[in-house]
Length: 180
Image 1 (cartoon, helix red, strand yellow):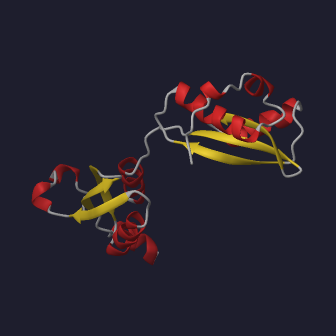
Image 2 (tube, helix red, strand yellow; image 1 turned 60 degrees about the horizontal axis):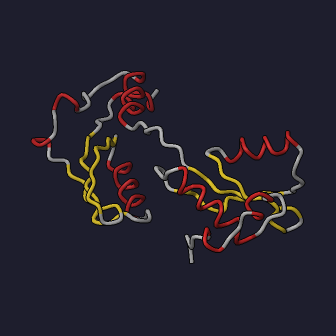
């Protein structure tokens, strides 16, 4: 029962996290139940690609006291608060993926859910392949045309046998250099 008592007696502290992400200044509010959790987060975010000038502030006078956690809460309240305060926004990444047969790339495609798309290929049975891989994780927010440009780039680069339409239409004037 000692762990339950510790959970009930946790003091959650709300921090303002200021940072630069690829040069653009940003901030967020993050809740930590103890200093160890805060230190782990600080170490993690500083090691992430694109993050710089990471600073954590806990100036209570600048925080909205109505949003701070009460000192004692039930397990349910504590869990609810952690889930709601650290929620993820719905953002779907796009992926350019390839199907591979005997170490040769046989198909390039695009999707938001790679595993589901691979299962669909298996169910359809129209393409022979023994493995797959993600070629490119395309940033969230790209347009459909930009995503198609990535797909076309890799199709023209690898010339897979199942991408017949793109291979037939491949003209140098349509070829965009997306990566070096």
